[in-house]
Each structure stands twice: as structure tokens, then as C-alpha cells.
Length: 458
Image 1 (cartoon, rainbow, N blue to C red):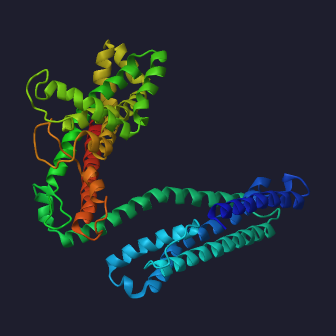
Image 2: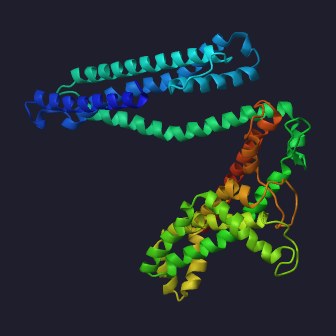
Image 3: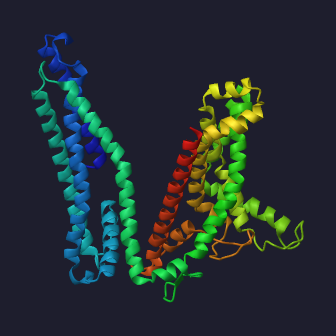
């Protein structure tokens, strides 16, 4: 049975359990809720929870374990053909591809090396899914039946249901934490594998980025790091003044009608796909800058040799992150108590003086957080950089030169058919880990600055 229909059956069992549990509680109390410890719906939810949670946990554990079991079956069938780790990885990829073809009814070549293994993998996977559905549905029925038999007027259904909901909320909160931990662990182990194959000093202090999958690569991060910070700096020069001024106008000067129209219009910028910004940079901003700063341009300076440059990507990225500054800053400024405004105006200060000397200092910690969010968004951007800044890893002070960023090279190094265990592929994880550490340090520094200022202000 497909997983979707397994979920549907379990949900139907839970719905039936809710109705039966509620009806049993009312029947046991003589048709009235006065004789029950909890409201009737809590008895129904207790049965539904016991029908849902154990079955879903079983499915989750099964889906985690089954792929490892299927790979084990496939490797046993492959035998000596998968002696090395690299050959085993490639063969398993072929096995899973052929197994998917079998599942779609597509005929595959019986003479293929992975044919027997793909058949075994397909059979093991299909059998495992069938028994998973049977076990999950049976467990759902058993859980609902057990909770149904415990339903009586004295049963404390509400505390049990609330405890289950509390556990569910805690689990939802832990997903983000565990996801972060998993990402960090994956980065750490693959970064360690990279530094075993490539010198750490050459990576952190190398001035040349020249990967070569045939050997002899020079993987210095400094050109990529310089391009990342340079483009982000130009983007912030565009976004912070425009976004902050827009937030001050919308919150302090604009009429309700203008604010109701202006704020959504600004926030639309955040919803535009980054590939559209990249096309805008490539087709509009780059040629426009060439007409001004290129050879034979309006200024006649010849600083820009092509449409892809740091300035192109920085300007477009700055426009993209304006909503991150303006929208958050507007909410933060509006959260400043009105009593501060009234006190300043009552003492004779003008509106501009009140904004400059009272409102902005009070809102500064939140505004710093908005700017930090915009900076993180700029540092992590990829598509605008790929299409607007070029792909050259270079160290240059000229903002009209083509450069690239860490995120763009992470994508390029993991694209293609290169051996995943080679330094040229593993360097993507080292780049990601370095970027993670830098952004973490920026967050810690920003929180320290905000905390120090808040203590002085209070």
C-alpha cells in the first residue's frame, strides 16, 4: 500500500476512534457531561491520539531503517563488484535508479551489472513498505482499541490529552534544534575529511582559487571570502539607508492610507524569486552600468569590462533585501511606547528631533537585528551572484570587476560527476563550515553590542 493511503487509513481510524470514544464517555455518564471528569471531546481526542501517535512513530522509525536494510541487500547481491567505497556508492546509485524504473513499470536491461541487485532492492523495498503499512494500521487499531476500553467517567482524559499535546509541541520545537545540530555534524565530519586530503593552511591563507578535478588544485578561500564580503557590503550600503528611511517614513510620517499601500508594496520585493533578480541584474543593471562605467561609456573611465561585476550583484541584492530592513524596522519603531513620543514633543522637541534622539535609540537593538538579518540574507545569496557577479575568484578593490562568493562555489563544486571523496568536492563542506562560523561570530558580536547599548539606555 502506498504511504499516502496508509496515512489516510490511519487518519480514518483516528476519526472513528474520536467519535467512538466521545460516544462511549457520554453513554457511560448517562448521556450527560455532568458525570464526566473531562469534557466529552477530550475522551475522543484521547482515543484519536492513541490511534495516531504510535502508528506515525512506527512509520518514522521504519522509513529510517528500511533504506539501510535495502542497501545491505543490494550490496550482498552485488558481491565483489562493490569492494571499494567509491564503486559501491556509484553502483548503489545505479541500483536505486533501476529499482525506481522497475517500480514505474519501465523495462531495464537484464545484462546490466546492477540488474540482480536492483531487482533485489525493489523487492525488499516493496515488501518492506507492505509490512510497514500492515504493522502501522494494526498498531493504530490496537492503540485506539486500548484507549477505547479505558474510557469511563472517572478517567482523567483532559490531563492526558494536554500532556500529549505538550509533548507534541516540545517535539516540534526540537525539530529546529536537531536540524541545526544535524547540519553542523554533517559539515564537521565532511570538513575533517577535506582537511585530511588538503592542507588547512593552504585553504585558509591561499590567495588563488583554481579547482582542477584532474589534480593540482589550488583551493584558497580568501578570494571567495573577499567577494562575499564585498558584495554584501555594497548590498547593505543600498539596503540599510533606503530600508531604514522607508521604515521611518511609514511609521512616523505617512498617513494611514499611504502606509496601508506602501508597506505591502515594499514587502512584495521579498517575494520575488531570486532567479528573477538575477535575470534583472544580467539583462538590465549590468548593461546599464556598462553604458556608464564601461569603455566608451558616458563617463569614459573604462572601469568596467563586462556586465557581470561586484557592483551589479551588490546593487540588485541591496534592492532585494530592502524589505528585510524596512519591514522589521517599521514594526520595531511602532513598538516604541507612545509615551516616549508624547514626552519628547511635550518638552518642545520637533518631530525630527524626537525620531533622532528618542525613537531611534529606543528601537536601535531591534534595528540592529533587522540589519543583521539582512546581512545574513546577503551573505547566503547565490543566484544573483551567479548571474550578476561572474564566477571569477579574484582579489580586487575595483567594484566593477567580476568576482564570486562562497555560496556560488559551494554549488559549482557539488555539481557534476566528480568523485565525492575528492578534495575538489569535499571543499564545498569546508566552505560551508567557514561561512557558518563567520555568520555565528557576527551574530554573537551583534548580540553583545546590542546588550551593551541596551544596558546604557535603560
